[in-house]
Image 1 (cartoon, protein in one colour):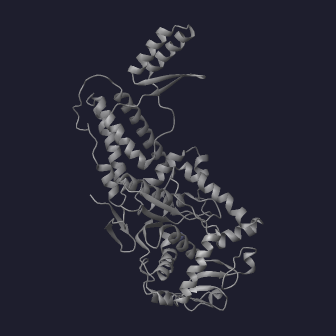
Image 2 (tube, helix red, strand yellow):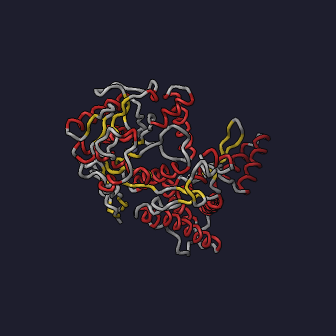
Image 3 (cartoon, protein in one colour):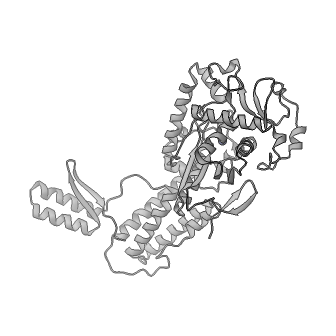
Length: 473
Ligand SMILES: [Zn+2]
C-alpha cells in the first residue's frame, strides 16, 4: 500500500509522492526550538512525531535529509539575555545544549543540519530575500524603519490556515506599536533596532536591526534544501502565522511551490488542561526524569497517540508506558531464550511468521496507535504460543528479526544487559574454577557447552564476559 499523509494545505489525506526520490533524498524541514528556556514535553511530542516520520520513511527505503533550525534571536531570547545581563549568544548556548541533551535522552535522531538564525551566512540570505520581496512590491519599509510583508499582494496568503483575509481586517484595533503597517496582518521581515535590543543588531540596507522569526525559516529552509521541499513539519500552533508567512516569503522570492506536504502535530495536554506555569502542570524532561522515569518510557508515552490527536499526558499514562515496556522486555527475553533451543520441534501455531501489518499501519498517516496495537497483539499471541510449546526456535528468530525492524522505528529497546539464563551462568562459574585450577582442557570443554547454549564466553582482564551469539536466523 502506498504511503499516505494528511496534508494541512489541502486538508486531505494524500498519497505521498516526493519530488524525485530516485535522484535525491526526501527533504524535511522542521521548526526547531526557540532557545530562551528549556523545551517542555509538549515541544518534545512534536519532535518525537518528526523522528517517527523520518524513521518510518527510512524503513520504507527512502533516504531522508532533515533540517531543524534553532531560533536563537527573537523577542524572547533578547528579553531573556537582557534580564540575565549576559550576551545573547551566551544566554542561548545553555538552552541549545539542554535541547540536544534532552533529544538524546529521548532517542530522537539528530537532524542532518541544525542551522542557527544568528549565523551571518543565513542573515545575509534573509537580507537578500527581503530585498527581492521589496523589488517585487511584496514588501515595504514603513515609517518605523521596519520592513513588512504586504499580504494583500500575495493572493494565496491564508490558504494553509484556511483563513479569510477579510476577517483579519475586521478583527480588533490596530495595536499602538503597529500603526505604521499598511494592513494589520502585514508581518515584520526586518525589525528596526530599538534600545530594548541592546547590542543585538545586524547591518542591512534598511538600517541596523534583526530578522523577523518567519524569514529565518524561509531563508534556512531554502538555503539547505532548495526552493521546493517535500515535507515541512511543526506543531499546529505554527500554522498561523508562522508557516503561512514562510509560504508567502519563500514563494514570493522563488516563484515555486515551497512545500509539497505540510504535517502538523496536535497539542499536548496535561490532565486534560493546557500546560502552563501558573497551573503548575508545566513539565520539562528533567522534571520527569527526577520522578524516576527513563528516557525510553517518556519517549513511549509521548509517541503512542496519533500525532493529529491531542495527547493527554497523565501520571497514569506514564505508568502504562512503564508496564508496556516491561511487557516488551519480558517478551524479548523469552523469544531470545526460545530462539536458542535446539530441539527439532516444529511450530504449529499460526503466529510462526511476521506480517507487514506494523508498517502498513504507519503507512496510513503514521497511525502509531494501530501499529502499537498490532505489536501488543503479536506479543499476546506469541506468548500464548510459547505457553503451549507451539512456537519453535526458527519462528522465535523470525519474530526477533521482525522486532529489529520495528525497533528501528520505535527505538524502545532497553539498553540494560541481557539476562543470562541460569544454566549458562552455572557453566560459566564452573569454567572460572577450572581456569583457576589451570585445567585448560576442562575449561575449553565448558566453553563449547556454553556455546551450544547460544552464548559466547570471552576471557578479559576483568574475568569472563558472556554475550549472546548472533542467531543463525
Ligand atoms: Zn519555522
